[in-house]
Image 1 (cartoon, helix red, strand yellow):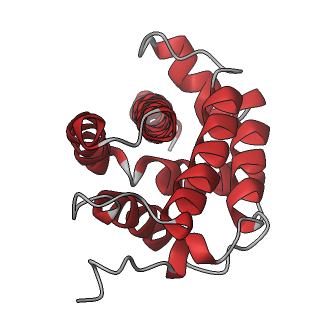
Image 2 (cartoon, one colour):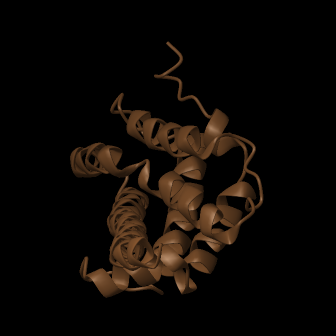
Length: 207
């Protein structure tokens, strides 16, 4: 019996080592996968933050230029800018969703789904001034309100820098930080914004 036991010991030791090795590999692989997922998500947040900054900046500048010079000539540049902004108009809603995930609870609710909010604002601004006539008081009021909101949004976004997609920044953003409170403030701005920003339909758009 002693001889048999002696023969089993090396096998048991080998199996134990294999088991330990497998467990270490499995744990290490799982940790790496989680880190990679966090890194990938962090990089998406960086790009989302950058796109949100671009969108807010374009909307601020376009509405500001139209308020400064509402003439027909200026409207071509305005229309171009509003059209350019369209590809970025989901950046803020996506950023809000990411910040809420990190926050662990929803921010102040908007009356309308954020994804629809920003598309509608973009669309409404795109119809203003399309008929070539002088801007109405209602149109000017809409543009002015949008300008004020996006000026505040752009200023808030400038409070956090995303100059690169470096891994350390991506991981830091994925874990939270100052950008989350900035996005919450932006969310609150639009949650408290006048409803006509969403419900507005120009005379041209209603025809």
